Amino acid sequence: MAKRQQTAPDVIDRVKAAIDSESHAGPQTGNGFVAYSPGFLDILGSKPSLVRVLESERNIFHEAAVYVSGDVYVTGNAGDVVGASANVEVHRIVRAGEKGGAGGDGAAAQAVEVPKAVLPMANGGVNYEDGIIFCAQGSQDRPAGLVHITNLTSFEGRYLLDNFYGRPFNSPNDVVVGRDGSIWFTDPTYGNAQGFRPAPQLPNQVYRFEPWSGDVSVAADGFVRPNGISFSPDQKTVYITDTGQILGEERDATNPSTIYAFDVDTPVSGAAAAGPKRAGRPFLTNRRVFAYASQGVPDGVKCDTAGNVYSGCGDGVVVWDPRGTLLGKIAVKGGVANFCFGRAGEMFLLNEKGFWRAQLDGSKVKGALLGI
Image 1 (cartoon, rainbow, N blue to C red):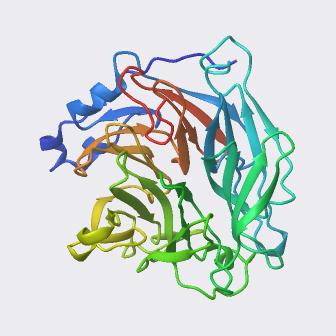
Image 2: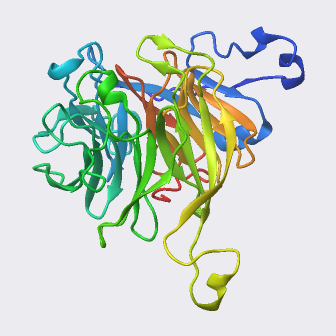
């Protein structure tokens, strides 16, 4: 059984660190909390903890991290197996937090594999109605797109979208849902690069889909490989990560390892439509660099209700304030691909072969997606 471990944060002297690169080393064990700003100490509270709840010999803790009623749904990593034989497992982490495991009644957390017949090469996911939308990366003979799992017991579901006006998607990676019900997702070319998808027929782009009308549109382009996507709490800003710097074992330090921010230009109606905002569907404007990951690449990205931005990077989960100022890090040796918020300041971190639980200040920290 995993035991709660209180972890005192390392506090970085930013002025000293500006001329002493070794000051950024972080915890000696590689796991813990690193504060670059007093604001991060407020996020942590007086009793932060970080514990590895589950371990696996396989890379089953990679993407999605969707929190549903105390359980967490995660997707795996194809790892070294590429090409037509590539496979991704999907697991439900039972008793991930308040039900037991790291923070509950003492019952051990479990990783239970779920059926995925309708879900080829699952990746990112998000809560949707009474189920989950997963990004299906597709295969050589099955389409890439968005799959709505409507029954979390049988894992039955259906495709919501599998083409852009007749052209196949590349390999959708991450997905988020707007308050108006629109579905926004990234679509990099990882599937072809890893050998399980045909040659791309679309650029590396971000899309917006209206399930009620069937309209799908390109929301943003100009990425090397768009990856994570998240709205700010007021949904006036969308954050998109570009993991173009790394592909498998190859690294090009001149490519992006970047989080971009965009303004969401909301449509208006009537006479006001003649003004600075257009009538019709929302569109993205004012693209700018929000942050750059100093270690690895920023993969998954999410916000808390205060507007702070969290991203899974090569040294753990990195946290910035809404202005892009580095606040601190939840350091996990080997990095974090994706994560999710649970209840009252708990977070669940995916570390490929490890599933971690972090406890922050439950009176102040809530994930913007669920607000619990």
